[in-house]
Length: 102
View 1 (cartoon, rainbow, N blue to C red):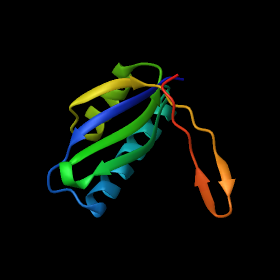
View 2: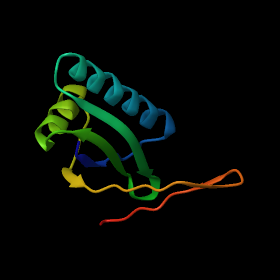
View 3: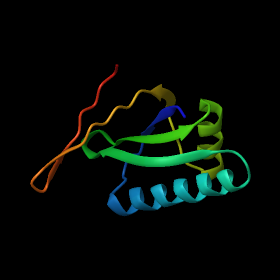
């Protein structure tokens, strides 16, 4: 299933607000999936100095991701398909990942 990156501008957000928004995204996507529209919220990356947040979703189309965000009442600037490749190697307690656009 394709991955989509949702870009958000969230001025004044802190860790508590980000956690609440992530919880709302998880709840909404879980409800949509149980109702027959598969969509999954995967994770968020917040850049406090820029008030930017990038959220990763898995769905069959950007329209489904848009609907999930609209139903959750979460603001967004854009929804873009993204490619994700992750190779994990454990070195001691450290986990390294490799991201690639290919």
